[in-house]
Amino acid sequence: MVRGLRTGSPAGIQWCTVVELAIAVRDVVRDYRRPRTSLTRPGPVVHALRGVSLDVARGQRFGIVGESGCGKSTLLRIIAGLDQPTSGSVQVGGVEISRLPERRLGFLRAQLQLVFQDPMGSLDPRMRVRDIIAEPLVAQGHRNNLARVHELLEAVGLQPESADRFPHQFSGGQRQRISIARALAPDPRILVADEPVSALDVSVRAQVLNLLDELVHRLSLTLVFVSHDLSVVRHVCDTVAVMNRGEIVEMGPTDQVYDRPVHPYARQLVAAAPRLQAALAGRTAAVLAAETLAARTVSSDLVGSPNPLARPEAPGLATTTAPRDSSTPTPASTPDPTPASGPAPKDAP
Ligand SMILES: Nc1ncnc2c1ncn2[C@@H]1O[C@H](COP(=O)(O)OP(=O)(O)OP(=O)(O)O)[C@@H](O)[C@H]1O
Ligand SMILES: [Mg+2]
Image (cartoon, rainbow, N blue to C red):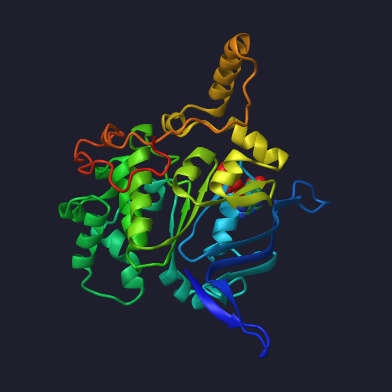
């Protein structure tokens, strides 16, 4: 959201635009000390974040990409108030949260919710779905939440009857829908998703991505979306930050970073990024690199060597033809009732 503000001297009033920030991160450092392995020396220090700064405007879809161990989840945990930085500042909705004790983070839980990578690990197997989804509401003191639970189930494409079942009675894609419903329960303004489709069966990744895309659009949410996969981030996000070894090495509009990466690491990452369809089909960067090499050999015979940083083919999501959620449901589970929904992917052909 952008609003106008009058500034300047009394002699001449100027107008400038002020972007309302949902999240402001300044010079955040996070060091972890590993357990000691020697009696005489302290354990080694891991520099998980080395001075990260970023702004996320309200309504923005901000992606964070980078290889495993570069600090993505650490950054998200700090933004969500689940961890504290060694130094630096984090503001959410204009409130400094980095030094607030847990008991004063209630406002943050109402404003910002998380979706994790592994839906089974993040859902209590002993709780019924209605209690799982209502949990954040109960924590806020709300009672009689069944109508809201049904509304949320419908929003994520599940039947109201799902409320009485347990997590193990659903497929992976359906469980991630339940996680998303729980995250939306307190009506947050910010959704933070850490690799939300990486653990899913390849056949349902597109559906869950499209669901997230549609909900963020419909509810005017601010999204922070982490993935090690640049092509998936490109589908969902308008801005992307590339992380390497605890630092942001490049940041900007997704198309710009994808089409004209500047930092050598960002160039490497973009060149290795599988196309979206391939990523959703679970093909690794190594397989694609081999294919690219083979294709380059063939095409250089014909027309010369292609540019490895050239924009990948518009991938698009096969939303209408994507198979239904079929990721190893238990016998008691129902098939995912929802075909992929939401707006056509922005990069659809
Ligand atoms: N609680 C902790 N104690 C010690 N080291 C930690 C802790 N949490 C994270 N680290 C280390 O910090 C670094 C960054 O970890 P982080 O989980 O943020 O990476 P990531 O980018 O999310 O990786 P992935 O893509 O595999 O999820 C890693 O070296 C990790 O081992
Ligand atoms: Mg992680």
